[in-house]
Length: 178
Image 1 (cartoon, rainbow, N blue to C red):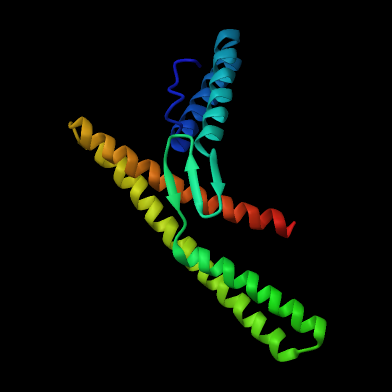
Image 2: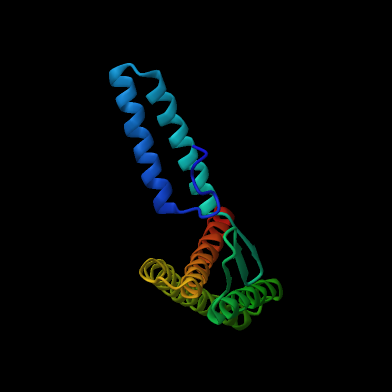
């Protein structure tokens, strides 16, 4: 449906649109109205596209940017944890290669510490991201000042970028595990 605002993609908004489309399509099927079936189907398709836009983000190293202009730099623990995992894996590999069990064990400990550190940073980014996203959305609705509304929008978009950053990393790990 072309009247949808494509510059502000929203996961929640797309869910509501999808449900409304399904209801409209169902009513069309019950009443035999091809127009309602077509409009409902189009609404569901638009909702799927809006949901995809809402999740669009680019991640380069520790920096994530969303289509709406939000930006986020990963929590320091995520970066350090990732580094510790890499170094720990290297120590395990070299220790196994040369038969040095203490080096291999040290690498395993460093890897495990890195996983915990990265997970802690991800949790922090998620909590902060949701707080910024919700606070920005509510603040923007309650404010009548255009500058303040823009500040709340940046807060919301930054929170969304933080959430998408963690999602990207988790998806990357899930794909690697497959």
